[in-house]
Image 1 (cartoon, one colour):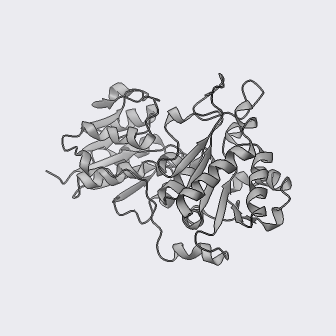
Image 2 (spheres, helix red, strand yellow; image 1 turned 180 degrees about the vertical axis):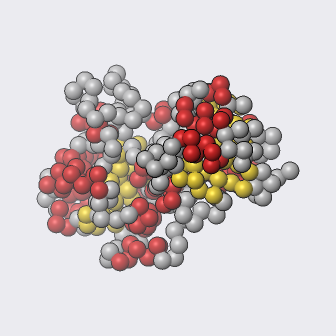
Image 3 (tube, one colour; image 1 turned 30 degrees about the vertical axis):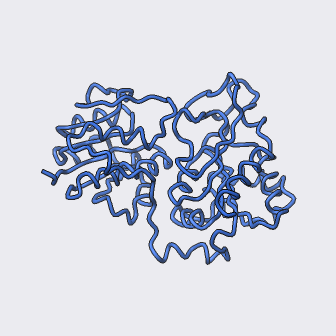
Length: 339
């Protein structure tokens, strides 16, 4: 009864993949003897390394593999497919792969190709809980077996990385100024002000991000009077090393972006700064977090992911957020967690 072959499709962004880890864990908890696979983008290797719930990782790199090749690879090999990803590609690929039971969202492209659909609404439901609702279409569904917090698993050696940087456990504050979408970035002046506030207090500040965030980080640090005291790791660590730095920090300050969900995976307090996006979309910190935003702006939200430029040219949603707003939220979280 239990020895099923189950496939999850999640080829969205890094943050989305981290928020899919509770779905993976919950499926395995409901079907402990199953063979569980996931299709993801290449960074799935980093997200699912050492994950005890997953049996097979299928990397779908669109630059190296055609859709037809992927369909052939999975064809008639699985009993159940579950897709939190709402793309047309996921719907038709799982259909053409001949998987008998296919569960997806009603708002997915070509959702009529699923055998079962679940409502998808931007009503404040967190993405984790929204994804877990897909499991209600399983006969074996058992709410008591759901695992709700995201998890990332570091091995012993990986978990020493932060020490090689001269950092001490829970003794530094992390700032992640980057985002793929320019309008989702809080102001450089704002980030610099927060860095200076904590540096002046004697806190160690570590700036984190990928290579694509280097230019904006340099802009931020050029406005900071304490830039020489900051440990700038932007573009200098791989994803697994970033996980370890986040795991051992005491607070993360970030835009509405993937680092927020990395921090949540390790239950690190996180202040998330929201501009063009809103919490109704469901990507706020799942636990131990605070959201800083300007409420009541008629232009918010202006899109699901933000834009490269503000559609009305004001960027008020970020410009109006003050250093004090972010500092106050940070101090409240530090008080709740460490005093």
